[in-house]
Image (cartoon, rainbow, N blue to C red):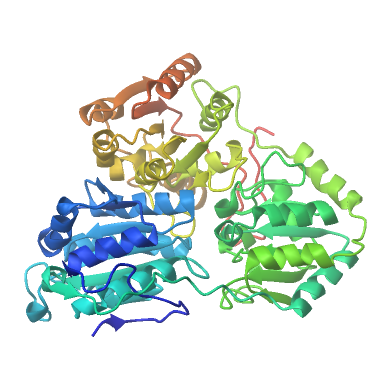
Length: 580
């Protein structure tokens, strides 16, 4: 029997190929994934998953991307999922292969990314004997996944794959895992009946009463704000959010995970709040009298000291996940259900919203008064300056996807890279996983072959997964990596200076590492950049090359990231750049 740690509300979870067709369990896995629409899988073979790789060798329509490390496979699958909205697929062997994907699974869980992980397991008769490369990966990942299965019966493989694939994307998306013993992969399977692939059960709609209550609150509000999170991206609700904002003249702020859900050039989009968000977005949130949260989870990096967050605001909270509503901040107006439908319904029942032009002028005035700043008089390149150049250089490119690692560079990317399309900014939000940027860029490139994919990385993040440059080159998935190289773990160094009396401990990255030479060693183009002229020339050449390129851009080690809300402070207490 299969051991499932959770169940789903999915219907028709059954194999989509003819009856009485003998094939191995591994064949069943591939044929089922093909029928479900899987196009790409990322993975690395090993002993316990060799039958699945033998099935790949015999033929499949699924493109397999061979990675250098299973963590890279997981992050590539996340990048694929984040760029498309469809589940990313990972193959890994047992033991260390399986445990190497735990970090991507945890990352996917925090950022609600649909991820299907298929792991090999030792033979069924060896389970529990501490056999070579045995690990109970179902138990290891159970707290992190929406569902996990150890499939012991070959006849259950097709239904399990169907259920897992759909569960990953259903409701609030997330990771799932199927662990398959080697003998189950090799066993011959004869399906007894012909059945269709079926379809996922539709998410429940919000009640009319809940939606109308929010509409009436909007009509009476004087300082409303739409607080939009990653759930709006997952629900493809950006257009509905924009229409509601336009109808009621409400300012929008978007979390890091929702960047681009509404075009950032839109006059009602006031960008990202939070620890390193803008002063104007933070003030708008915290001085509102009606906070309309759409797929946002009131993360501590946004709220600051939660008991002082938006103290005068009534909260309307739209979410597909009942566990999120009221978890951090009490929601006087809970709206549980499909976000896209609920936001659209709110717009339809809205009658006469209160005039909010004065409130819009106030927020716009804050934006004009407190813009992002950096020291333009400093010698050498500054991080924000590099990002401003990149943003200008890709103007006119039809489809651009930005990915990032984690650190100061990630927050500068949030601040200085304007995004006009949903799913165009892919970063590790809740888990804050260094090393995410490069493999995520490769996954995004596999998902959108015509896109210009640029990874903004730091030298610390880059060194964690730089071996995946070999994957980008070998698999012909060209990406551009711009490394903001300050020679330190910049965010850690900043915190040590600010909160540990300037005692900087173990934050210097390896002296003498030539990142451009590392890139060339993997078959990519490598550039070392020291000034604006070099940045301009090398990035233009990289864009035109159609090859994987790495720009090692030297920036000042002492540069600080602002604005900043100190840990434990209220959201209105925003520290600005001292150059003001």
